[in-house]
Amino acid sequence: MVDVRNFQHMPLREMRKFFTKPECVTVDINQIGKVLEVSVLPHDLSKYRIDGEMVMCAFVTNEAGNSCIFYAEELYGESQREGRVFLMMAFARYITTCKKEFVITKHTKLTQWEKTLVDELLMSRESVKDVVNRLLIPTTYNLSEIFQVPQEFVKERLKDLKLPTLIAGYNY
Image (cartoon, rainbow, N blue to C red; front, side, top):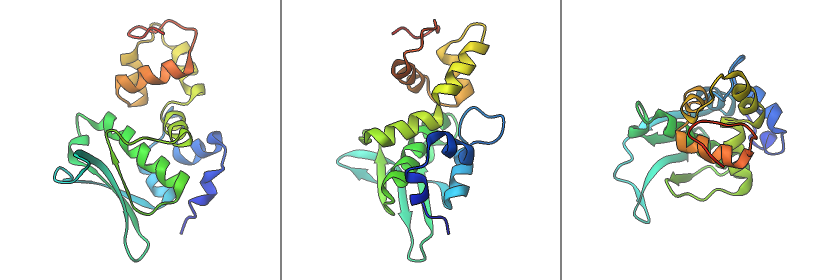
């Protein structure tokens, strides 16, 4: 059984090695689940609400110690990019807190460390710079496709990175 505390103070570059397949620029959600021994399954969460907000992910652990992230079914398919962000939020919360049960909603507030994990694992500074430099005309759409995240996430990440490069669809 993996001890998630080993990841709490691990450098992000090292963590990415565990969670990213070779030649990929972003993490593989299934790989993270495999390494952390957490199952990831779609589930109908539409009837569950926290303060009126729909639950997007629920992290649960059974009596035997087996953990699973159940994510809202609508995050599969066309919303898969948005689903990757919510799943990464759940993994970041698990890594930083070691909590065995919690939920993620659309407005879940992340700690700075959790936000850094989500941002760096989905769109690391190094990978973004490399990809932007390789594209003839970098756009938020291209970056969304490459990093498999929504364009809004790309725009927020670019705002944080403050890259001195012109990227179509984004101005800072």
